[in-house]
Amino acid sequence: MENIELILIKISGDDRPGVTSALTEILARHDAGILDIGQADIHHSLSLGILFRTTSDRSGDIMKDLLFKAYELKVKIRFEPVSISDYEKWVGRQGKNRWIITILGRRLTAKHIALVTDEIARQNLNIDGIQRLTGRMPLGDEEPKSKSCVEFSVRGNPRDITAMRRRFLQISQEDEFDISLQEDNVFRRCRRLICFDMDSTLIETEVIDELADRAGVGDQVRAITESAMRGEIDFCESFRQRVALLKGLDESVMQEIATNLPITEGVERMMHVLKRTGYKTAILSGGFTYFGNYLKQRFGFDYVYANELEIENGKLTGRYVGDIVDGKRKAELLKIIAQVENINIAQTIAVGDGANDLPMLSTAGLGIAFHAKPKVKQTARQSISTIGLDGVLYFLGFKDSFITDNTSHEE
Figure 1 (cartoon, helix red, strand yellow):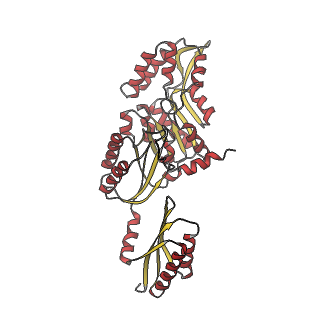
Figure 2 (tube, rainbow, N blue to C red; figure 1 turned 135 degrees about the vertical axis):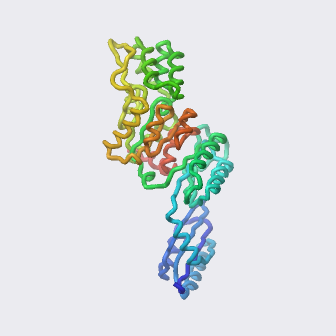
């Protein structure tokens, strides 16, 4: 290999069509082998790197032709020799794990990025790539529903993955932004089923509290609900107590509540993208099927599993029909739907906010606590607390440019 030369070329300048084509055509003409290539475009400014292999008798002519072409294209080019030993060390690092770190919030600042990258460095990880998933931020005051998301591709084996997750949770809470840490494996790139809790996740209310208000027992039911969501009392027992308090309520009240449900920010945008990209979607709720079916019809969910209220002579009896959908049942239903759809459990996602969602969050390949209670957020590996439910799309790697294009082509 004495005659072999490895040369890294670095090209920068204004981005325009044809730069990569023109430079690689020269390499092809001289029969050079490309060992690595990468390109980024930041505000129409090109940064292109190509590592190529050639022989010492050809390298001079290649660099001369590249230099003339760069001058013609009005870009800057630099040449850097790479030793074979350094290249072999780089190849040896390819077996290390890869991670995707996603940060998002209403507006990301230099401090947010500095906090995250400091922890990346502490864990002796190397950043391979950085990309912005959201559109460019305006210079003026931020919009109330603005979103900002940046994704880091990181390589290496963390020194202490538990400490890393703990640190990310700490800084996200202190500085009001969200951080997701996922292993970049084949399953992350091909999720296929996503299951949602309903109350306080897809909708910004607890429906049983709305029913209780109409029945005049709102304070009693709300106190039981909060205690159950905090994990202080058994969900099934709390459910029986709350449903019993609804006895005598007119059935027509449910339709009134359904048509006025406060839908969580981002649900419509998220569901449009998930449906158009082939995801199966399910509502797994400790709430009620009447409202789950309303959301299914409105947004196109594939499955709804919730609790059925017993109705006689147009009135709620204070009883329910069938088994209670509690936390354990949600996890079981997630597994069953995955089996029916022939989906590996690692390809599933679960999103919820309460303690009764923890079993399905831990069962799914990706569990996301959404605007969750403290206990849930501390237990779940991923969480979203600063933006709407369409933040889930960024954890899946979707970019705003794709989402906007996908949304604009209505049939």
